[in-house]
Length: 174
Image 1 (tube, rainbow, N blue to C red):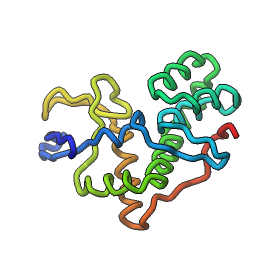
Image 2 (cartoon, rainbow, N blue to C red; image 1 turned 135 degrees about the horizontal axis):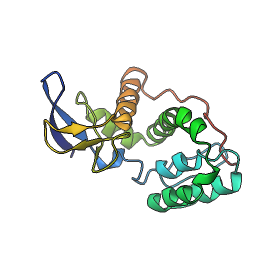
Image 3 (tube, helix red, strand yellow; image 1 turned 60 degrees about the vertical axis):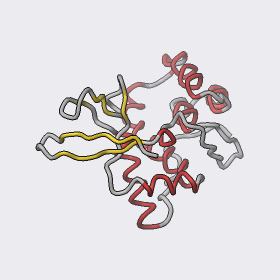
Image 4 (cartoon, rainbow, N blue to C red; image 1 turned 120 degrees about the horizontal axis):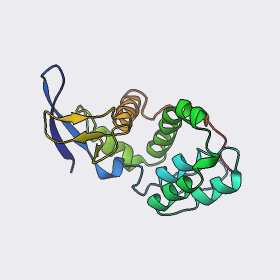
């Protein structure tokens, strides 16, 4: 069910971390926005959030069914992105997107709860911001921000039955 990774923490402790492909923002998971718009993936919503000043671009990204295509469309418009502003917002936006995903998809929430108590790690070949680049149990690098957010949401599900969903941190096209 889960992909498992044995990792050695910097303090020498060995831990078994887990990942499931459905935890990925590229996995299909319908999220319905207050406007009724329903992006096919969390990735499309995350990418659209980068452009609050361009509702047409947001809508185009939100309506892109393929997560890779949504990310590529956002990349094509990076010149419009205010880098410093986004750097300060992206963790908050990702937290909001992930909370929406699991609040609106009860089966995914059950899957997330089934991962307890293991740490959640997004394995990646390149992305050491959202995931971990793992070469061996002892040799890995990264911040694992997506894994951290998933563990926060899992704790909220355990404690409250559903994640705390804040107001959208950015404007999303209606």
